[in-house]
Each structure stands twice: as structure tokens, then as C-alpha cells.
Image 1 (tube, rainbow over the protein chains, first blue to last red):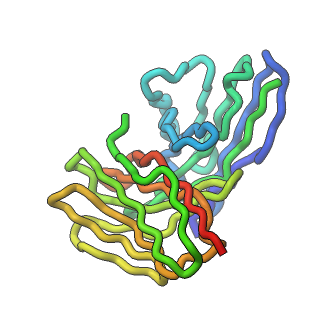
Image 2: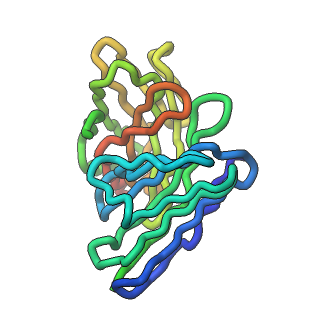
Length: 115
Length: 112
């Protein structure tokens, strides 16, 4: 139980285009979703926290207009990288806290390459 | 944002040996301490987690030791296997459902 499905797993896009990453909670309701970014050989850095039905909370230094987060339902949160540039190339991972206690479920990650 | 410090950054262990990874935290409000295993190109997978009310938790070959007064916790992997070669992250959070703060990661290599 408590599965988060993340798509796509890999995406290559051209500079200037936008890319949408989806995270779906398959068997539970995710009222909150955390979005992380991970550079090669580095740790996960929290980008933003999305809450269903309200605006996302962004960490300091994360551009809200570049990384658009939508959490329109209890089972779907999306991250859109707008006007992507090569420096946006990274591994993006979503995570949802499990209901009723501690524990988190992670998506399988999305490798974004901007060329 | 570095509230959880992890060491070593990399570790090489012989097959059958014990792998030990350490983490220290600063925020006394943290009350959940998980360890994650990550393979290249994959999301982190939970290995084992501990709450501050116990000093040790064991699950199979994996053991967490927790020292609340020192604000430190560690992961011990007994009888390390080549398949354990991965990157390991400690993390911490306060209050159920709050964000996780990750340590810097340890790249473990277990030599056959």
C-alpha cells in the first residue's frame, strides 16, 4: 500500500519548452506532496510543498514562476518546469506523507535533461 | 538548510563486514529519523526508521542506534553484501507529515 506513481521517469526537452511531471497517489489520499530536486551525487533538496486546494509553499531560492506546482486533487500533484534551460536538468522526486502517522512514500523520480 | 550532517561521504566495505554510517542533527523538534537507500536513477526507498522513545531498532541486517542526548543516530549494516552497494541517506522530521530534512548521503561500496 501507499504507492506514489511518478511520470515520466525520463524526459528530454529543448531549451525554452515546458515539461510537466506528475505524481499520483494510487491507494491513499495525499493532501500534501513534497517536491525534491537532486543533483548528481548530491542529496535531496526540498523545492516546495504542495497542499491540495491551496497554493504551494516554496523554499527559499526556488523560483515560483519557473517551477509551477498544482495540487488540484487529493491524488494528483504536478510540477511544471517552465521555459526550461540546461541548468534545470536534474532528478526530480515527489514524496507524500502517509496518513495517520509517520512515514513517507516516494515517487520513482524523473530525470529531466534540457538540451 | 544543513540541519542533518552525515558521515562518511563514501565508504568501502568488504563483503561480510559491517557498514556504519553516522548522522547528527541540530533541531531538537525532530522526532522521526528514517534511513533511505537509493540506487542510481531511482527514488529513495525506506530501509528503517526510529522514533526518539527507543535507543535501538533492528530489522534484519539493519540496525539504527539513537542517542537523543548527543543528537546522533547511526545505521549499521551487518554482513554487508555487494547488493547493498548504493547511496544511503539519513533524514529527520518533526511532527507527523512534516517535510523531511536529508543528510548529505553516503555512497557505500561493498567489495566481493
